[in-house]
Length: 171
Image (spheres, rainbow, N blue to C red):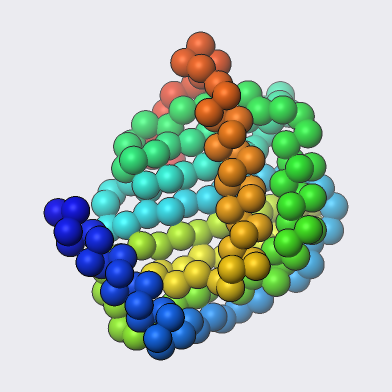
């Protein structure tokens, strides 16, 4: 199985570099504060390999929800109040509003990896994703910077910090 996954990834990367990436759709430059952030990276399994959601609960507190390793379980912790602002600063620094809505390889690939991100602002949102294709490294570095920020907060938390558990099946 690991060999098949490695082969699929090599084919995806090879075909993207040899044949190029197609992109379509565009995002308007957002205005105002970040309202929420969502990111998903998955393969053909039922649940995502990595999934993050930064949003506010019913009382207005910042929450970070995540799952990993194709698990159905979603764990939720409180996030710092400045996290949406930090995400907004990364969006601005990397100009993530230049992300296209969808990325695909020019070659026909039927299996592999998909990703999606949605950054909701008070006005306009950024929606982007791809199937076996990614944006140019300068833009992708911004998505990775947001994910690294979120993951660092998750890594700094403990089991005692988890305030809720739910399932992707309930979404």
